[in-house]
Amino acid sequence: MVKFNESTGVLSLSKTVINSVSVAVPSYEEQQKIGIFFNKLDDNISLHQRKLEKLQELKKGYLQKMFC
Image (cartoon, rainbow, N blue to C red; front, side, top):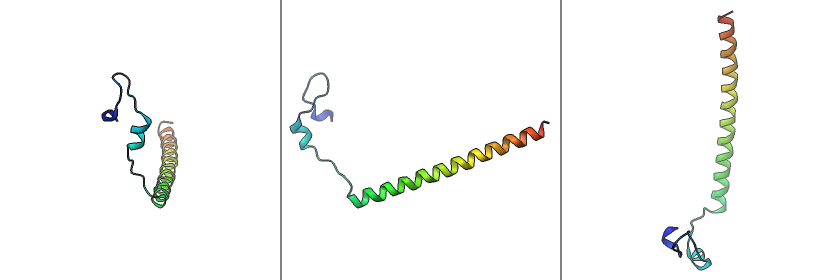
């Protein structure tokens, strides 16, 4: 956005400049697919996080048995 700066100090953009900037936005269908993908990714991360926590507890238990 620096190339559109209309000020000498703090970055400043006029409404005209902002309205003239084009932004590529995915279609609604593509946005939905992206949202579904990230939801599945979040679910997958949560699943693996729970597995990791269970394995850490198991490790803790085995270590306690080893040294008792």
